[in-house]
Image 1 (tube, rainbow over the protein chains, first blue to last red):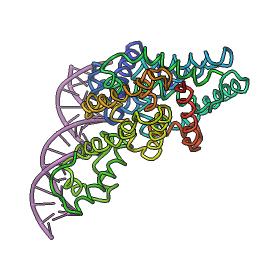
Image 2 (cartoon, chains in turn purple, green, red, blue):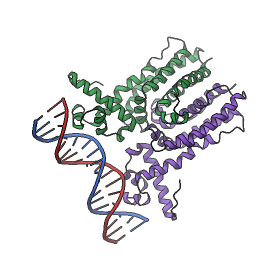
Image 3 (spheres, each protein chain N blue to C red):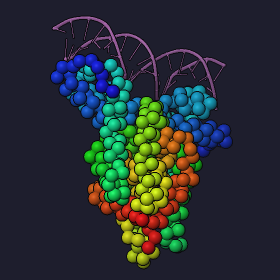
Image 4 (spheres, rainbow over the protein chains, first blue to last red):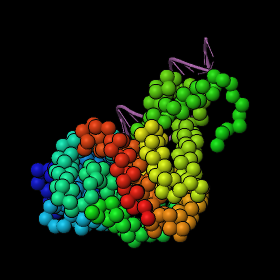
Length: 202
Length: 202
DNA sequence: GTCTATAGTCTGATAGAC
DNA sequence: GTCTATCAGACTATAGAC
């Protein structure tokens, strides 16, 4: 997804400042809810100057989406047949929970996009994402067939890992309101380990 | 949350038509992403006529939010110390999953609001919602103390039920892309029963 | 109660000086 | 490359006829 136009160092720096500011604003207000003015201010630039680096508001949003999708799926790609089944899955859960804690803006950006029907990444979901999930579901099926973990539906297992980990980023406001501001992550890590161990341990 | 002004039958009918249309549009595009024109068209009314029944776009949105919050929490209110612990919890999971299937628009409306920091219902989250969850966490603690279910953090248990069930409504697009359009709910119901049984059965 | 017309505001994007 | 000024379109909401 990288553009081919050559760029100077200052251009690269400004572009990444804008993307950082865009992530900040878009993740909080969504695409329609964000204004170019907001992003420009967050980036410390004037509106026309921002639009000198990106042709449009949508271009910023699209670049964020596509460049983040890969990173977001890296933990799932790392799920491999090599190691022991259950520790491998628990590792995946832990990595996803770490990402929810360390990159909540990225999580919310995707959540907002998917919540609205994923109009801009539908193809990626039906293409790359589906292919990747199909592949990993196959790995899980092998583990089940080999008796390494209990029999569960591999797709719903993956959905449940996504749902449970991303919940702590996407619904952060609600979690914090209920817990009264107490850090949810230590408790979440222990709970999720317990949950997936009791579900999968043969 | 009902207004006190007296209304004729036709007023009530038009108001509920507008709220229905508002739910349709707001749940898909969020507050900022929705226009009064869209809602008016969905309701089969002209824009000024719609604004004759509601003072503003925000008034429609607010009425939807507050009138739906109660319904949304009903299944949790129904979680009581009466019956057996595990079946009671599995019933709650099933009811929440039924709501995700039957009322996905309501689920998405809340998800969008919370995703953006719940600016309009923060008080309700820190008040009524927290009180209710605290109360039900206490019920769960009693079950644990009585040895009726295994020891888990009650708050994370409740969060996990929310996350797992609402995922099928809120991230419907993603679930469908991965499953290729296959109905996820029968599989989800079986998977979630398996998951919470293995987690909680003493 | 419902409509057409429009006021007034916000916002994405551009023109053009420096 | 960056700024000020500004345009064009979209949007919420209202005025006023019927």
